[in-house]
Length: 417
Image 1 (cartoon, rainbow, N blue to C red):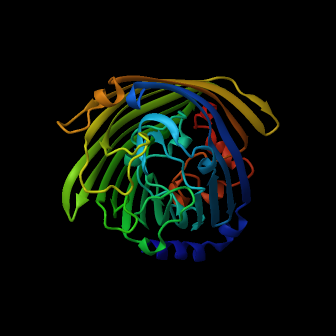
Image 2 (cartoon, rainbow, N blue to C red; image 1 turned 135 degrees about the vertical axis):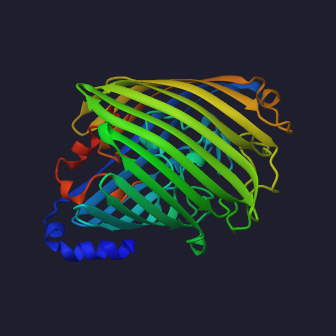
């Protein structure tokens, strides 16, 4: 039905689609990062340096046609993972895993606006579920809830319909997570998973969104592992007030592991973050409390077996993190810029069940600190948001022009990009 609506709109208004301007843009960025963390596995204090989030992105709009893509080179610079206590996923624990080289490559068609807008996009990219990728948010360090609150790097077809302030999205995709940065998705599993997301756009830059996803065996590539049922609710606020740019996000997520229709484990996450910028300097704060499954570690204590050797876990830990960040004025030359920043986080880990894994014994403490400093480097213009395509991104085709991205970006926390 949605595809038919899209095609009818194209036929009914061909002149508007043809008159739309062509917009081509892109950029490249990377972050030089130095991190000191206390209470890592076996109670050690570690100091490590990386080149993190090295990405190249591009986007094209030409009438109803839209393409967007992003290459991520963390597979070259973050092979051991980025030190981030509480983080987990894709076989990494207490380190953020490197993302796939082809982080996003989506093409699609979008109706030329009017009271009802529709779009269909396909490729490898973000599933319409949860909140924006943390790379598009103020903090360099990822939250613990990354695998609870986002689904990305899948072969996906996304249909979106927008009427007034309401957007509805539906998608089908492959359930399997990437094995490593260079392994492509398993094409024969395309269509075994699906998701829905609804968003209500309100006044003063507010968005209220709810998501649901049914994911088939994400951690076992061949499809015989545990399935997941995922829910997510978030409220996002962006806008400007005089010289200030503001941003806030509050989200709640739950992921339930399912074995042949029977719920086994449930993992909850709650997060709130906010940022205020004046020009290219700003401050940000984040509070998070998220559950994490604990699995058997390998000889490298920052890694776990993938896929897991059985259906059981060693326990569930609850991670509470309070973070603050300061972004300092940037130095700009033509289209290039460099912006220093500082982040500090206090982290606690608690055992929530009488299970085998005890974080106090494993880390030597339940209270940890992380201090990070670095410089964001960039040239050109990258993504303002990640994971919203076509009719769902809030920027109609009729708005495309030389300054469209600047207008679309005025409500974003520019000092943290």
